[in-house]
Each structure stands twice: as C-alpha cells, then as structure tokens.
Length: 147
Image 1: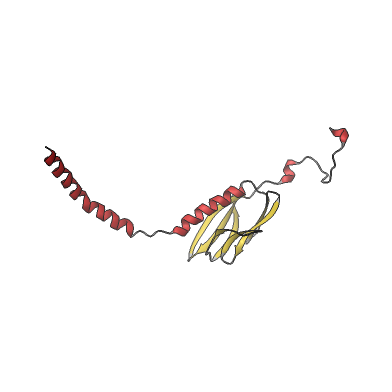
Image 2: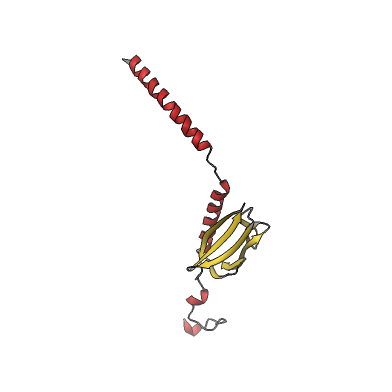
C-alpha cells in the first residue's frame, strides 16, 4: 500500500514539473523595475511629511512649505528630488521634474529614461496658520489681567 502511494506521489510530481518549469520561464522573462518601487516608497514618505506641513507655496520647479517651524524647499538638484535645508533625497536619476496643480492636488511630474510619471504628493489648499488665529496683532503680549 505504501509503495502505491509513493508511486502515485511521484507520478503527480512528474506531471506538475513541466508546468512549474514553464511558470518559472515565463516569470523570469518579465521586466522588473526596482526604481519604480523605490519611487513609490519614497513618495509615500514624502506624502506623510506633507500631511503635517503648512504655509505651502508651489511653483513650476519648486515647492516650499513650513514643517516643524522650519522653512523647507522641495526641488530638483543634480537629477534628484531633494528636500532642503539638509539633503533628503526622494527621487534619484531623474531627467526632468516639475510640479502641477490639478483638481485641488499638487502633482510631482518627473521623467526617467524617457518614461513620464505623475504622482500626487499634497493638497494645494494646505494648512495656513493664519486660519487658526483670531488675533489681528502678531506681537501680542500676555497681560496678567487677561488670565
């Protein structure tokens, strides 16, 4: 009885072997771009940062905003999308980059190896700190009678 089970298992394995070989041959010929996956991961991190930024201003080649009470600029430098001050690289080896505003969203449009990509990175409305203040005077001092 065990001999029959072993032979039946061997026949099943031999029948599936050509299908597995064809599947491996097919998947090995598929082109795979690691740079696109890296781009998606880094742009997801950029979106996470952009969620808590405020005072957002954008132009064709530059995006400036305030993050953690510091002014930052997002732009293309030496074929890389950089966040400055400092040097945080989000996209590398790009040929062209610009920002566009469509339907209330800011898109980063870039080109690499003659392929064009467009990704949403932020809302164009943004958060403006003046929207949260009812005070018209910026240099208002605390008065002990106001407590």
